[in-house]
Length: 358
Image (cartoon, rainbow, N blue to C red):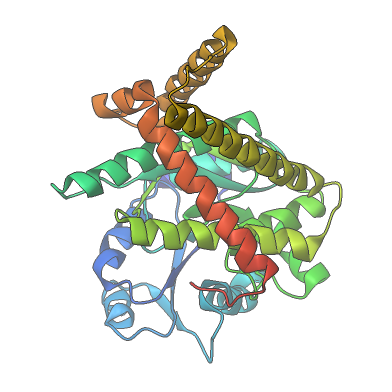
């Protein structure tokens, strides 16, 4: 089926704009734009050049796409997107927001429109969270890459389990109804919160508070880059967690956020239990005592391991090493302990109102 016939089938009068916020994205912009151009549904493309010091703007112009240069923007991605949406929102029916380091499948928009057409109350739909292949032979970088593939598969499985009200319509590739975004703007005076560093999570909360449904479509495939060093991974995740905590502090407790608050309480309880278990094991081992492990413990470990293996089904082309990591238990358990440390540090940064780091 050619592009014209698909457009007529899905609604030929539907106008779609793809916005790509770009700050010094010269290395990845070409492949990003190619992915958008190859869509089975027509879309206008706007690259928002935000305080670029490289040749991002010139490259975008050479690729013959529309460009918008931000004016006095000090609010990073949120500010760039708001400037674009202030200018073009009402000219379109749907808005695809895509990161410049992301590549999308040629049918992403087609599948997004199909999903949105199923439910008039669906305000936003995001893609499956895929990870680009890594071009490295360093064992440490490969390990971080594999661990995040496992983690991202878990993210996707959670989105399927909460379809209609997912936690985050992630920013790597998400399609929004213009009507939903306009309602956000009418209530809060802006679409993206320029004072928050996890703008996609905050916008998701706003949409749900207005009664819009949010979901993910596993047929919408997209691939992004991930950090492959501990330093960059720590920085990214602390930013995510810190932004999420700040969002909840801003919105307070209501019927939408109460579940999020309970999840944080559960996280703290589980973290305390983990610390107590580690302390107990350390005392026993140091004193030379015998570990008394209840048979129920082995059952719990078995259930958690099987659950982890099941969730791997959402990772594309699962690698043997990823199955081994899950079966070995310890590597991913250590990774999750790092996850806990990142979130605890984010609590501290939020409570002390430390400066947000991008």
